[in-house]
Image 1 (cartoon, rainbow, N blue to C red):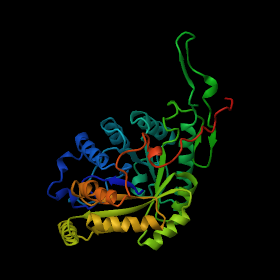
Image 2 (cartoon, rainbow, N blue to C red):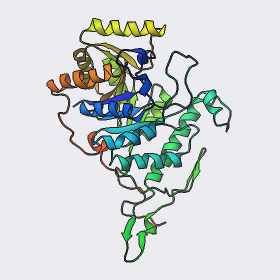
Image 3 (cartoon, helix red, strand yellow):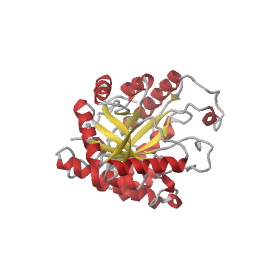
Image 4 (cartoon, rainbow, N blue to C red):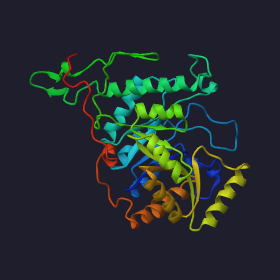
Length: 366
């Protein structure tokens, strides 16, 4: 079976999407808007949604959407509105403290009853660094990747710092926790020194999903060392196979921006109209697909056969391309016996075929 994710970004991934008929630009900062998008993705039985985030307002143009809500808080707000779909907000490791984010993602896992993940990003722009004033930028990419690796390691240790049965809740004896089942993580590295334990009990999944978007070798190494899932960008079935082999041991999702319509011509004309509206041809670090849901299904299945686990699709314009995925692509894949007809697990790790990991500290003394 193919696994499918959708990447949610404002009004869509094309910078002119907010000006499309059917767009809801006046609702981009309202919870109902995000709830509607995620529930549509769940109606399509998708595995997960990712929610984008940045440290800065983006490029200095007044004709594009600028400003955004916090991705982790969006995920926590929409979690009670859904029952099955995974929620994977973006968290930026650079400039942020792993203790705070570990607590936030653990809380999301509780709010969603085991459907949380985190997509870890780095921030390399000097203008982002100036929000914090802690160090000079630019910083070499290998150093940023090494910092992100330590950040993930601290987060993972904090998730394990409470054993699963650390909470006793025995009113008769007055003991709420077993202190021997809370653990110092004692992490000391080049970038962080964190004692622990967390103030949040171990998440329902044990370890929420950790995802990384990778286009370069340094981040490939980070993903292999620290992540469960990697989003990457093949441009052919052959390259998809090469990436799957290079990232062996991980779930590997191909990343595509999609513009979908009833005919290939209609899809291409719609993208061209968006390009003209924006005044520039849209380019992306992801592969761009323009065509019908059936044509997209052909490409996804070819890349799946080459070795990919699944796909993260970035709708060019919302809601048009999101509903084309859920109501066009999904039925097409179902007819070919390549996509689920109902959710088969209650957690995100379960949907992706990942076991609940054992606690690394279980049985150790404080």
